[in-house]
Amino acid sequence: MSTYKAWRVHEKDGQYVGGVETLDTADLPEGEVLIRVTHSSLNYKDALSASGNKGVTRTFPHTPGIDAAGEVVESASGTPAVGQQVIVTGYDLGMNTAGGFGEYIRVPAKWVVTMPEGWDARRAMVYGTAGLTAGLSVAKLLKMGATPEQGPVAVSGASGAVGSVAVEILSGLGFKVTAISGKAGQADALKKLGAEELMGRDALDPEKKPLLKPRFANAVDTVGGGPLAELLKQVNPGGSVSCCGLVAGPQLETTVLPFILRGINLLGVDSVEIPLADKQAIWSRLSGEWACPVTEASARDIGFDELDDALQAFLKGQSAGSLVLVHGRG
Image (cartoon, rainbow, N blue to C red; front, side):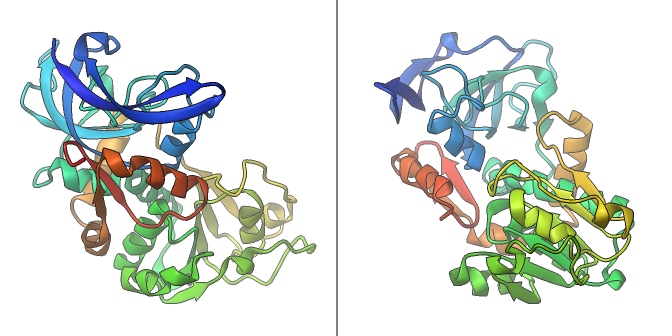
């Protein structure tokens, strides 16, 4: 048994309050692998969990953190091996299983991905679930035959954690990227990521027409809701849109016309429950040919003392870029 620190959320008189506590590894859930977590990422889902969203986390007190990276300290089956550096993202981590905002997690072996060669925990968490999701979104477009020669690729929510990585990956692959963002102050950052064209959020304002003039060959949508409906109206015949987010809302009000008159493909992207091998494949690409040096250089480290403000920024739509929680920092 070992004591450790965790940023834990309690429900108090209908309010949800997070703070640092000292806990014991004996109280962690059952699982074959005990991991000493050194780094975690911050995600919109973490913010929802910390704010008491029962669709994400049912029972409190709870330790959020849907991402974690660190070292295996116990392994019932020997795989992964003790001492090995690993990554855990998705599944139930940080939702109803104590997550990466604690210095230790205990999880099933089938949740654990081996750290790519040449990487460390901090670098992995620069990407985290956001980077994994961006990679999966791009992979879906490529699987459908997307090529740079077809024309520009739009990325909605481009200044967010998922969108920014998608912009950099696509740019690195030779695509002309149109970054759509409501944050005018992020224009220079998006250009550094490789965006060739910038559009404001108003580019996806609601239009009554069921179809609009095509302007994008393909797209990555990270926001959902109304903006996704408008994006579908503007994709070239035969083009594809990979969909991975809902910050603009879970409802999709559209018509069948983009699908039956232009043959548009709407591709769902799940980064949570997919097979471990699929996750490992994307991690390998992110650590290799899909590496995002601008994203890595601009990532910001924070400690426990900055967590609450950072999570509130997610809920207010004010977060940009990658944030890495470093255990022991504060």
